[in-house]
Amino acid sequence: MRHRFLLSMLLLLPAGFPVFAAAAHVAASHDAAPEPASDGLPLRSREALDAYLAHYPTALDRLPPEARAWFLAELDFGPRGLRSFSFGELAPELTKAEIAEVQRLFLDAPVAARGLDDAEAERLRSARARDPAMAVSAPVAAGYTALVAAGHDGDTVVAAYDELSGLLPTGNDLEAIGTGDLRVLFRATRRVIDHDPAPARVDAAIHIHDVLAARGWAMRNDGEMAHALLLRRGDLASAQAFAARHPALELPPLPRIEDAGVVPDGAPAVWIVDPDRPDVLTRQAIDLGAHIFIVSSPGCGFSRAASEQIPHDPVLGPLFAGHATWLASPSHLASLDALRDWNRAHPDAATAIATDTADWPLAFDSTPRFHFFRDGQLVATVDGWPAEGNREALLDAARASGFVAAAADDLAP
Image (cartoon, rainbow, N blue to C red; front, side, top):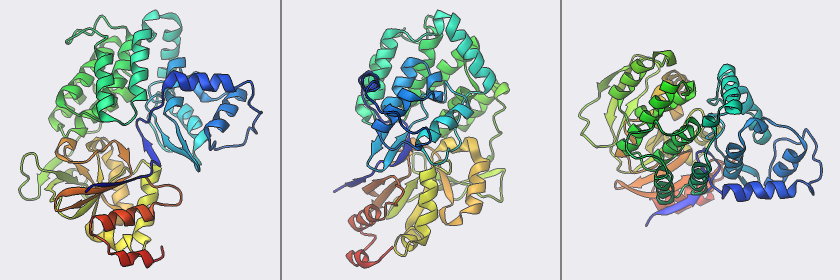
C-alpha cells in the first residue's frame, strides 16, 4: 500500500486557487483592512498580504493585472507562513531585482531566480502600452485562469491545457495568434509539461518559443527555459541544435558523456556530476530496489536546508548515507557549474541528474520531495522541508517502506 505524507512547504510550480475569485476577495477586503506596519515582513498570512497590498506599493504593481491575479492565486499560506511560492508569473514579467523585492514580502531571504533584464522589461512595458497585439485576449485569459486553478492535479491540468489550446489555431499555424496570447501559451505549455512531458508537448513549447523569437519577443529567460525543457527530457542533441539556432543566448556548452557499465534503453539512469571532471558527465543505470530518492535542487532553499540537516540526524543521517540518492531534474544540465560547486561543498548530499524524467516512476515538479522504494515499487512519498524540519514524516515513511524499525521512535533528533 502506498502511503503519502504530505507537507507542502515547497518552492514549486504551480499551486492553484480560482484566480479571479481570489482577486475579488483581495479588492473587497481593502477598505476594511487596518494599515499594517511597513516593516512587518515577511508576510505570514493571506490577511496580512491583503492588508499590506492595500496600503503599500510593491513590485507586484508592475505585473499586468491578469498576471498579478494568477500569481496571488497560487500563493499557499499555512499556520507558519507561506508554504509554496511560484515564479511562473514573475519571471516573464519582472526583472530579477523586482522578483527579489517580491520574495522579500514572503521569505526571510530571496533566492536566485530567472527574470527579465532591465532593457527587456522596459521594451515589454512600452510595447504593451501602445500595441494591442501584446494584450492577452479574454478567452485566453479565462483558459489560463482555469489552468492555474487546476493546481497539481495532473489530469485536470492536462484537460485545462487542452481546452485552452483548443481556443487557438490548430496545427503549427501560430502566425494568427497575437504576441500576448502566444506568450501565455508558452507559459501554459511549460506548465502542462510538468504533468505530461510527452515529446510532442516539448516540441510544441520549442516551436512557440521560436515563433516568439522570430517576432523579437522571446526573452532571454524564455530561451533558457526552452533549452532546459530539452535538457529535462535528456535530449542533448536537440538542446545543442537549439543553442546553435539561438547563438545570442550564449548557452553554456554541454559536456561529453561517458557510460559506467551498461545503461539499458528506458531504464532509470543518472548523470554523475563530478566536481573534478567539469567536461564529463558519467551516465549510470539505477536499480530502484530498496532506495530513497530525494528530488531536490541546490537553488531551492528548502532543499538546501534538508540536505544540511539530515546528515546530522542520528537515524536519518545513516539511513540516507546508505540508501539515498539526491536527484535533480535534467534541467540542471543548464547549470552544471552550480551543481558541481554544490557537490564539492556538500558531499553528504551530492546530487546526480536524472537522464530522462520519462524513465522515472516519480515526479520532478517540486522540491524537495522524498520517494521511498521497496522491491522497485514506490511505497511512500514525503513532500517538503518546513522550518522545523520534516523528521517525523520521513521516519513514518521509512517505517512504512521497511527501512527503519519501530524502535527508532525512541531516538531523539
